[in-house]
Image (tube, rainbow, N blue to C red; front, side, top):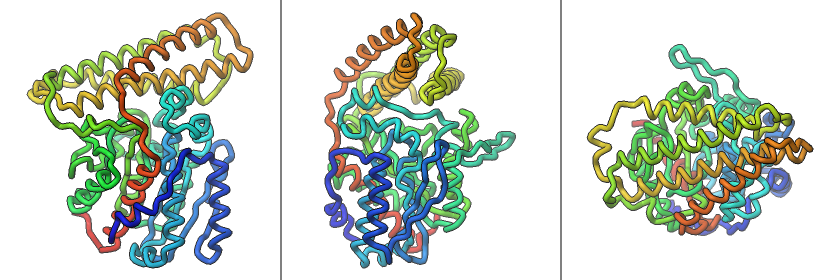
Length: 444
């Protein structure tokens, strides 16, 4: 299969679609292809939003594609649209891939609506972090699948997650593809199989669109590399039990023996994320610097929360996210600090990629958490709750936000990535994984 030819068909985009626009497009696709497309409601969100799935194709195997598993990650909505249109327009490709495709373009519409203020300006980093929303792990669609590991149990499955589970139970997929994106890193992938052949094919994809592969720290602790920028997915128990969350879609896909794939693509790119040359700083020093910054962030926001906690009146999602994420970060810091002292690996020189990705992670965590905290205070002020503590903390944290944003911008010469390139990489990964599955590749 000539993957590059299909990538060249991906259309350009200048903005992310709103939830309403995605619903309208699903309706239009169903109307345009009534004999090929099936559109149905598979569930309801926590706030009453319809959760819909569109099915296309009639292959002997089934693939489930999940867009927007986190509400600040809307690239997948564009990818779902491009892939549906490609499959509808190319019967030869449908037959070659050998799958019946089930698309959920937005798995968390409630959270997506809270991010829509920046969807029209994808490259505006300040707008992104100031209008950012993401729930803590136990309220994320991707991390609330049932989990039972030893003495740990998680059964607080969200309605949105339950809808994805019902869809998988119905079709028993051979492929589950969760479409993710990040902020300031290279492109990378997670696989639930140690499959070097598939990993090598995926590793070539970012370069086809001029995206740097990610060679910094893996996002999920304990992720084992299979190929450059392709990692073996850690068990959900590794994450869920540590932070009071559940399993991931990869854990649920394992029930069916399905190949599970995650594609992570960046909003902004810089060649340093791929630079594996050594710096003059020990790796342990880079790790320690990040830990200090994380503790500063936690203490800053904890002090601000103590100052306003008695005055808060609005039960907003921003308040829930702030309170629970602070607790998650506290536990993360404790886990980091409880690890054994420096070993031989910490004394080696850090690579440029490791140092750069560590700094960028610090910048974005600070701005994301502070942005949600300010949105919590915005909601109080909008409700007329103008107590001195709320007004003072809003003023002080706005100044801190400007300070941290200035530091991040001074450290970030990279440019926004063209949306078409991000969609092309995610679409190409779907084609590669589906053809690999159709060829009858078995787990290693």
